Length: 134
Ligand code: ATP
Image (cartoon, rainbow, N blue to C red):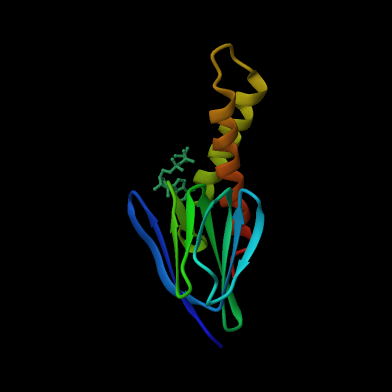
């Protein structure tokens, strides 16, 4: 089976450098499946799980926005933050989700609704990726 290289990079450094037979990403226009040899393109990403299929296993990575750069033999993800399922601190993610939910419910006067909503989405994404890890 053909493979392509996958690099996931954040401001903190590289998160993952591996090979995959197929990548499934959540882009702004919907879910996208990428096979080796895909035409070159760039797509903005949503907060979501990046799935890397290799042989019989699937690796789940929590990616929080950013960009996907596709070239026929290399796919690069540039994101503000990203974590492999195995490095997710589930207690921290649950705490972050609870904090954001409480802030949204309290509706305080100076609440930055969009910011807190994004915090909640990141936390839910981490919890989902942790729970579906291989
Ligand atoms: P928190 O409120 O818990 O800090 P956050 O969504 O505000 O979460 P980010 O700003 O997205 O955090 O990320 C800051 C750094 O912390 C990044 O390096 C990110 O990978 C890491 N990080 C955040 N939450 C977790 C988690 N639950 N498990 C592992 N790493 C995490």
